Image (cartoon, rainbow, N blue to C red):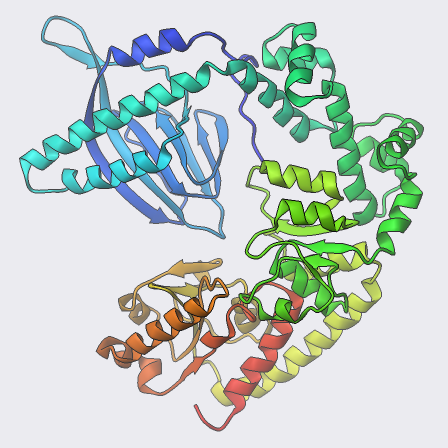
Amino acid sequence: MRMIIIHRKGRVQMNNSSHLSTRLAACLYKLEDSQHVISNETLFQHDNSLYGMLLFMEAEGDIVIDGRSYPLQRQKIFIVSPGAYVKLSIHPSSQADYYYIKFYALQPADPGHFVLAELKCPDELYTAHFQFLADMVQEMEKKHRSDSSWDVMKANMMFQEMIVALFKDTIHEQKSDLKQAIHLTLEYMEQYYPLHITREKLAEIAGLSADYYSRAFKKQVEKSPMEYLTEIRISQAKQLLVQSDGSFRSIAHSVGFSDEFYFSRKFKAETGYSPMSYVKKIKYSSKIASLNHQTTGHLIALGIEPYAAVINNAYPITTRLRNTIAVGHSNPDLERLVTAKPDLIVASGSRHVEKSQKERIFNQIAPTITLHYSNDWRVHFQTIAKIVGKEKEANGWLERYERKAETIRKQIKSKIGDETFLIVGIGEGKMCVYGLRNMGTVLYGDLKLTAPQGVPGIAHYKEVTLEDLFEFEADRILLTSYRHNGTAQMDQAIRNEVGALYDNKQWHALKAVRNRKVYCMYDSQHLYTSYNALSHDLFLDKVHQLLMSDEE
């Protein structure tokens, strides 16, 4: 679920940038410590005696600061006051990469004396120069860790330069408060569209009079607030109509329409179809666009070649699709997607990540179904099957899959017993251990093979070093790809990495390597690592072939 930011009194604070500027410029800033954290742990302890700056290089989840929740994404910066309550919620599929910088903010008291200042700056800071600041932080941390007192002094000077640049960017951003006020109400409508929302309510949230708010909104968005709200409600209704078995009345109520007949009139005015005709159109349409390999694999397992899809060699199956329109290589291309004119778009994502502008536009092209990351692949598979009217086929497919998994499980278990099995991903200059998702859901879930110690604590993957592999003490190792982009250059880079492993004495000291129980699948790109029905079915066959062969 995405979070929106509302000021404590429900109003955007306007025209306060000059006061904030004066207050921040009057303080003296001193770097105390800097820590670089790469972890999927949610435990975070803020030093209550100091200010803290959290600079997120990569993150997915939420942060709560004194009761206010903000979505975490890459390139986000927060200031935490002394004594503030801070809670991190890192999405289990990802690792957070951030810097925690502790510092003093001091203001003059008596001559020659300073006291801790009360900055009263926003929790979340804005900058147009994030990479510049990130590079400065990395260099600052190195100098601060140095044994040289001169380097420590330079680190503090760099910190002061950084915080000046950051505060200036934030103050400049606050000067566009009207734009932020409108954006705040856009976010409110997208989050709370089922509620009774009036123009006056939205104006109150923006901190503006109703008439001025309406004029400003229409100038910025090119439609009235209520027209925009209706558009959101119809968009949500499209998804419910093709996904749920609810009555038109219940769907109308769930998206904010109090009257089902008014809903039907509005729906037809917006789409050109009655709700009933629209459902029939989607159910029997072959014009389905898949925006990632996960959904493409599910569709192919159902016997459906996508009408349009993202196509690249990272998932080799897609390059064999002869009639599918390519709408992107690594990511969907908006222009190609518009030109393709699909009837339905299927994507995958996270409830914790704020929608991008591009994702909002997807819904304007065609109803967009998002398979949420946290759901099991079987739920994804059955959701798509229900949308396209292939529930019976999906149930039959799953029954065959379960029987096949059970047969293979018995054969493999009789051969290897409780020996532990580690999945290691090899990338360019990187290595990871895959956890319980993706290939793990087949290996440890469906086949019930024994996971080495440490693996049950990894939801998706964890980047490791060669030295780290000794901690898992695995009896067997499966080598596969990690972050393969589908290029021939990446193929060669991964082969080089594997070659370097086999030239390394530490690699040969691992139990599985000594016993010649290493299985190589790194030449298959992400054919088996994608989280979908087709990949899992193919992986069952591959594991059976590898483990039941006479040679190990």
